[in-house]
Amino acid sequence: MSEIKDNISFHISDEEVLYLDKVLEDININISISMSYVKRTQKLTFSRLAEKFSGINEKAIKRYMQQSYPSMRPVHFVAAYSWVMMVPMTAFYYGFKMKEFYRGMDDHAVEVLVCIGKLPSVQFEALLSIICSYMDSSTMSDFIKFKQQTEKEYGVIDDYNKLFPPKVLDYNLFTEDYYRSVALTVRQFRKKHNLTVDTLARVLGISEYQYSVLEDETKTVPFSISIGARVKLGFKLKDHVNFTSEMQVYPEFHKLRQTQQIRDSLIVEALSYLTQKQKVSIVKIVVELLNLNQEDDSDEILSEHGQPKIPTIFS
Image 1 (cartoon, rainbow, N blue to C red):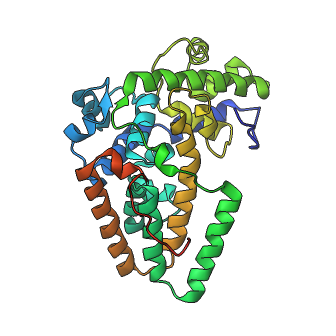
Image 2: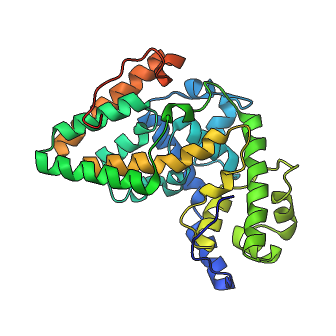
């Protein structure tokens, strides 16, 4: 696991744990609201969504997305769902407040961001060019400087198209790979920061026995989506991307989580220069592209082989 540079608090009081309990008491409802919002925005039916998985049926997917479902939403399902929908996993924590995840963006911008992850690289670059065509020379220059600075800080997205999920994601294989990575990295995290099992268990809201199971890479036992939020908030981490760094069957999932921030940053900045009317037009373009891609839904859509190179202002 790569080095975590966050300012971690090693002494977590009972009051802080109670605060986590309070702030995350509605997390299961928020998750179901967010997942449903993304499905509607991307205009997917449940039957079409179920076709994107093997190993989990439509009935189970519907159950996890119902607000009235009394049991937990397992973290591995939300992770797999986030990959299939190409939406950052942490965005699902926000429920009706998804705009807060996207830094206060308005409804139109959030719609774009919910769909933008599914656009292959050539379409994404073309969309940026279209947005920039609304800018004057001064604001376009500012945006290009921002883009260059973002890529300098976070890196350039190389071959984003290779980070899309398989056409049909093996849910069981993904689950095993996901929990194996969590087991390895959470153990590394505990040892690196000299944390006790009791401390980790209290922060994650589970028993010490359950925590021992979480650290066992040979076991695949479902855990609540809350463990990701609790470790991030409890230890004041910037994110919890590192906990997927040991995925071996699907390493693309981890790489995607690293690169989503770059795409989001560029789109958020570019849209900030547009008027509300212009943003509405961009939403229509993105949604229409998404619809066309889903109708075609072929390997060619997600591949640059045989796809014409669209010249952009960034070439």
